Length: 214
Ligand code: C5P
Image (cartoon, rainbow, N blue to C red):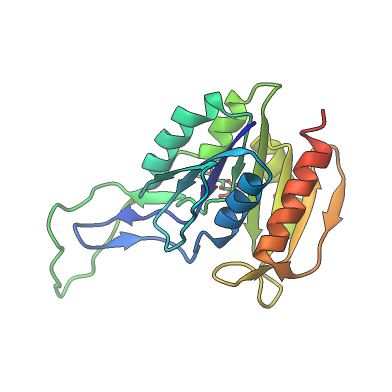
């Protein structure tokens, strides 16, 4: 069994020294990779720029920088995997042009033009065979539940893990997380605030009990 996991943020270059990104640290994705590897699964971990380390012989780590690089790495690896857990906080927009030199300070406003990135999850959702599974994440600031369920349907996930931003100590950068899992069959499972390693155990238990036993 080989599982692809994406983790961390992406960096979208503005010029030779600057980029646009988000607060993702990769902690949740790396915790998922640790749990999968320690249960004997082979893991292809596609990581954006993060400080996390992982040393397990079952893990093949591929480091990428941008959403485009992550897209390419996922497309190359997903066909030979039994499924994927897409945990990365991929940039939704990227600059239309990258300046080859450091942009100089001026008195005028600087207007950046951004174009949408390719949606890795939606593309994988279309490629998914009936032998493969796909798990996604959602971080919502409003209408959390309805948006997460709509996202699961649109991207063809088997289940979606909703991270709550309304809970103190949950989400970006924290060591703890509070999740709710929504299934394509309509079930909803809420978990209490836990260490991300324990959250990863809950997610992989859910995967094993609901998808891998098919
Ligand atoms: O639409 P949104 O970005 O909120 O969806 C989140 C889910 O989609 C996560 O599983 C994330 O890893 C994935 N995603 C992706 N490629 C993108 C944007 C999001 O795989 N360009």
